[in-house]
Length: 413
Ligand SMILES: [Zn+2]
Image (cartoon, rainbow, N blue to C red; front, side, top):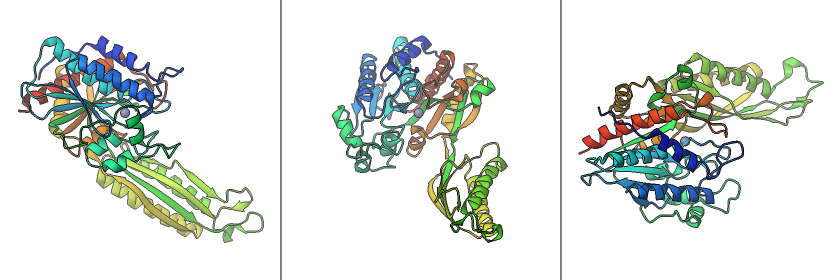
């Protein structure tokens, strides 16, 4: 394992300069996908890549590929992330992975280091899914999860007449390159953790072994509306009491599968939602997450049993619809091992970690060997203007990325 070092000050300076595009008064960034500001950030990224000797291609969904050539015209090792942010986003989510890729190219240039295979730095379109839903559209289209027409037709959530495709054309990023079909030897993505685990453990590097699976449900509980005064307690069919039992059960299911399970009810609608009417109907959502499919299946069984028990005890009907299923995505063991070795070689304390959030890497894992590197963020806070990260941790993650990429790119032939 090689032990080269990036220029951490240059990495930080680039992140700070990029963060000026869409900077918010509270120190965050608002740079929505395919907005004018996104276009500005993209042009700055391309200028920096070209100055670093890369050749830039843009595909029809606006994904940007900056290629640093190798000795041989082999499939490239790709690394990157996204430049778009949440409306109240921070300076590091996405931007870090793209700037880390750029810093690798600059470091190799400084060293006069020619790799065997090319390295490509990628900036994926619309990872956040905030202005245009769903999320991870650029990488998803590249990986064949979404059709190109479908992806281009994605409407703006506030102004449905505006589409992602139209906005990409307007900002000059509906590129000529075809979407997908581009060979990828391996994909690495560096990202802030967006959770509290690494910071709490005092570790600068997380070796991401995969992304957890998710099961989303929509549950409708039906009882009977009745007057809150004249209806005796034993005769009631109170849908909200049933829903309350289900909500409590969801929380218990999460705790029962500690430490990795997450279980959330985040949306509840009560009808008629009147203080002197017994609720006749409740609609609620459930979000289950776990890195192991077998545990998710067990959580599913427990949820359905809890719904049946709640219905029986309150004389209700419950309808449980599975709304979305996203299987757990284990990353490539060889690449994950390379990330771990790179961290160890450089003397960075590290631990294995599962990604709780979705990332472009999750879709890339469907078509190429993939791994991720996490660095801590202050307080575990992300999708927030106060999102912050320490320069030394960002440098550590980038050093790990550099050496893991090098180990891969030299063996790619
Ligand atoms: Zn991100």
